[in-house]
Image 1 (cartoon, rainbow, N blue to C red):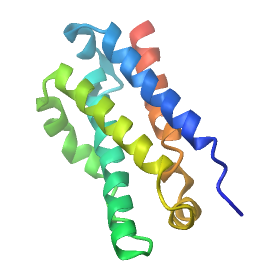
Image 2 (image 1 turned 90 degrees about the vertical axis):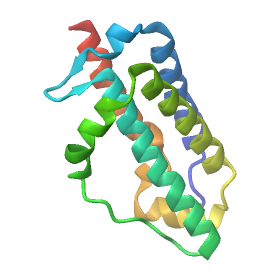
Image 3 (image 1 turned 60 degrees about the vertical axis):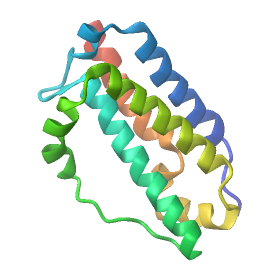
Length: 145
């Protein structure tokens, strides 16, 4: 069964959300806390990291002609937080936007058969909006509160 191609619009909408957020926030607002250990900028760096992981999986899957998913323990978030915090806030926003835009295009043009394998493994790897919007909702709540 072919993949529901609504991921294209959903991913693009979440990328637009990142772009709009970054455009309206100043550097001080990018440093606003989101949860216990993160800021808005760290959240954006986190999104760029995980979108980059998907991009890597797509590249290797396409090259090898078979599903490749790099195993990464979720504890990577904990030990990466200081590195993400070291990224200047505006740069974190730029990296998040550029990575999301590149990944959106890559997913849209990816081999349907291989994309279906990736989707069957984990739909969040194709529907990036699910992960992005989860964190963008947290950012919105932090900025309001």
